[in-house]
Length: 174
Image (cartoon, rainbow, N blue to C red; front, top):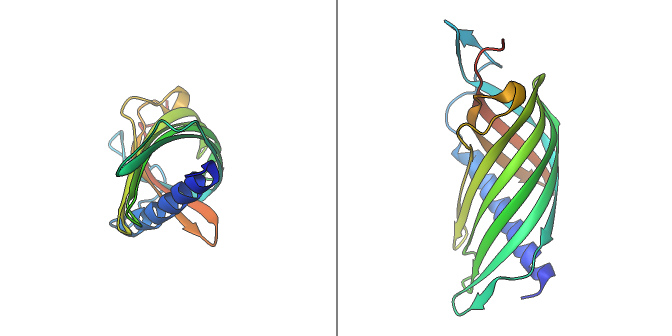
């Protein structure tokens, strides 16, 4: 499979997982950074992002699945303003609509006025077109004013445009 085809397949997987991830969101979103008795409650951030994925040399092409790697750069807009670096591992099978990816993404920027960084962990799969996606904040990965952040992110891709829906908690600002 050519690098261009690999990028296409991974983009489709990411798109499918992003749409599925959004559909899996449960419950209403809370107001931004509501504090009750000194404890952070759920907060909600939304916006858009652009992503550029760059295929790395393929790791393995074997019967049943092709293993691949990609790196990526994102630019976030909205309640989260910043950039990220992504490292992704992929597995694409010979069965149409079946693939998987895992990724680690370091996000650096400002989230509703609080600056710092945090790491997101991705796990996505497509089973003959039925997709699942989980994107969660790696525990204790927050820095700066984002120390203590926890949460999950959903992505949606509509007409080629990417958006995020981020439910998170942060300790009360000092």
